[in-house]
Length: 135
Image 1 (cartoon, rainbow, N blue to C red):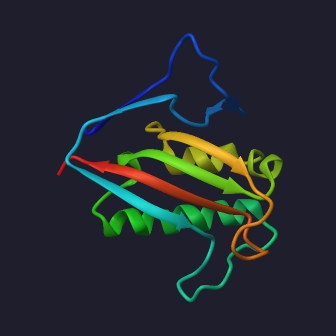
Image 2: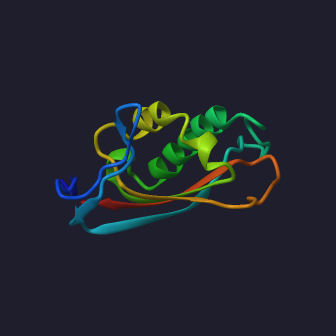
């Protein structure tokens, strides 16, 4: 196993609707790092998916991240760090169950930042990621 995902008992653990949102610490051992550039809610032709709908954009970004990981021979379980940029953090945090569906129990360390705007005015979120492969 290339990584251990840990929660520190002596630190506050943020949860929404009973879902932990990230691991506080990841100890990673492996042979290859995979760096994934910001993933957006776009279809294969570059069209924005889910304009004005944060949940739809979370789902599309997750699918695009899955595809990017797959190209590298990785899965969500190989992620060790994500950085999420959102244009409305309150709207983003209404959907912790979507994040739970994506990451399951192997939660990477994560930082979420609210930004004024992304590269297109209809985009509401972007995720960049780091994975670690033991192959």
